[in-house]
Length: 95
Image (cartoon, rainbow, N blue to C red; front, side, top):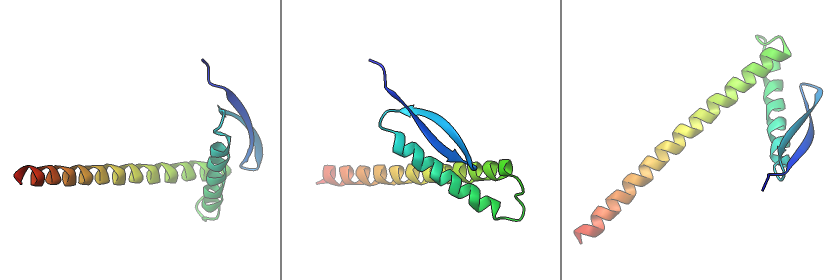
């Protein structure tokens, strides 16, 4: 059984692009492009970013940094919940 693929037209950096994605993921792709466009616009408002390409790179780096921070937070939360579960098991075994 093959996954169905959809074509999605979006605008990025003021230019139209066509991307493929799994059927049912079209809105997620549009949302991702909207977020990237928003971040690129933020980078362009900075005095140090002069070209679309640099703005795109900076936006991508910022998003990757935020993603890594969220992964670290998730890992910390997972470790904390595992510690709590272990304490609960130990407490219940002691009774």
